Length: 179
Length: 192
Image (cartoon, rainbow over all chains, first blue to last red):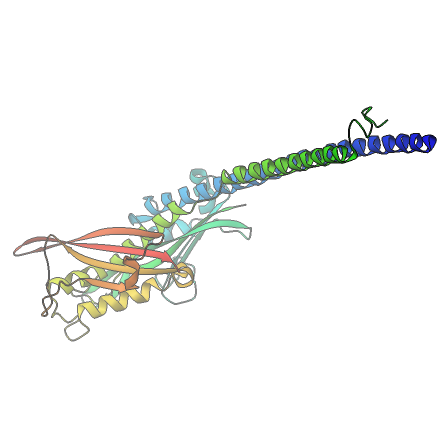
């Protein structure tokens, strides 16, 4: 009976030791999992924030270009009112996009459209003033853009017996950057 | 002899079991603390996550929308009705005037032109409500009932709602024989 008791005590001691080792191993494993999870999360978070920062930089540039277009004397009669004569003259230049890229940089585009309910019709000297759309540096690429309401001053607005009167129409300016 | 050299007489089995349980409980508490710290860290970091704010764009959009609407030609050539701002001004100072001689009243034309043009913008159509409000500054115009007159075109409840709104203001100046008067034009837009 004494032998049995000693045998039982030895076995119990061995099992207790094994349980303790297992306990510490499990705890260590869990802490490692948490640390690795934290590293993965922080890495993912950094990458996401870098992406957001990049997008914000692009959108800031698009907004800057929009504000510049609304006030640039190359296009407007007064702030936020485009002059259709100036737009048509600029649009008709053979290298209009390249000329504007020297001022505004690369990878952007602009569109101005009169909201007259008609389909967009590009303005050239041959169809002016029977047109309602001007575009600069438009390409088939993915982009991020801003739309802003604007006025377009039509130099030949109303044709009366007494003469020709200008007319201010409503339109939309879209300025974007390519991604 | 048990592991700690304790016999059942010195340290009863119940006490040894209790010690084991205490140790297990301590480990569990440690694990829970680590989980809570990790979760707290995640929430803290997410609070500093950068997002793209559209406030500057929306302010620019609202201001330009108001400016654009005020400057539109209505199609009439008489001075009281040529631009939308003229018709709004005419509503206060010459309410009996008919545009084009026998056409609509200034208020009716202003209402129609503003509503039609603002609703042409996709952003407004799809996502935003608007209210155009015109109030006299420094003087009062009264209706025959005695109530003060002001123009409101759009969603009238927007003015008093406590939600995120974007507001733009402009002023229309009118010089008459009795002096110079100002009308305050306010455009408020808010998400649907």
